[in-house]
Image (tube, rainbow over the protein chains, first blue to last red):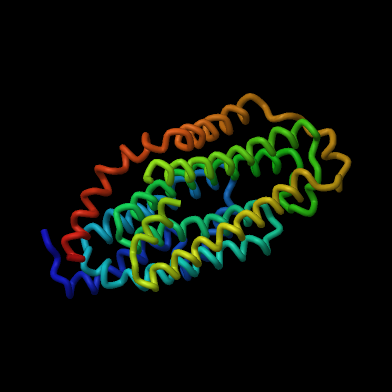
Length: 196
Length: 101
């Protein structure tokens, strides 16, 4: 079934922005930091790990798949918004002092990569967008879990109030954090090697 | 990284510039994550009560361990994920390719 181009152009923005809000599309991302930080640990993990990915899935599977002409037409706008989200999210993260806000703003940045991949409309970029959804889902859920563990013990999420934790905990938490990041990079590097 | 490769495949200057801007954020990401981890976990002692905190329990280790396992498995064998993704994305790409041509 092909939808007429005029109809696609009319309805694509509604569908894409609707799902995009769920996946932190700039400038509709402002719910993400407050939503993540006010939710309990399990809800934050679910929200960042699964719910936000539903938005990316909708942008790809519903908006782009049903209305490819409009997706092609609006791809420039999607890419610009994604680039703003990537940079803005990364710099905003640097200014945060609360661990949950740090992870939430980094999610804005990382979800920007998903939208960038979708906006590029190439096979490799869309594959990368889907892989980014999975890897970010696992990584950010792990980070929220670790933040919850730290908060349970210290009753604070403020970076300045944490400092060095119990030595055993420091080793454990640090190894968990590093695993999240090191293996993500390994994963990405391997993808590049395999593709070449 | 796959997103960057896919983006770079488009030859127009606009797409290349967008890819470079997106890549630049990797540096910022490294800075904020190392800074936050360093300050929160490996910084100077600011509260002596934190020195007597207990270790993570089995349930916490299990939850974190499962997520780490997922990250490690995908990290070591991304083709497992790629094989799952390909049939779904191929359908979308076929539709997009028909439009772009």
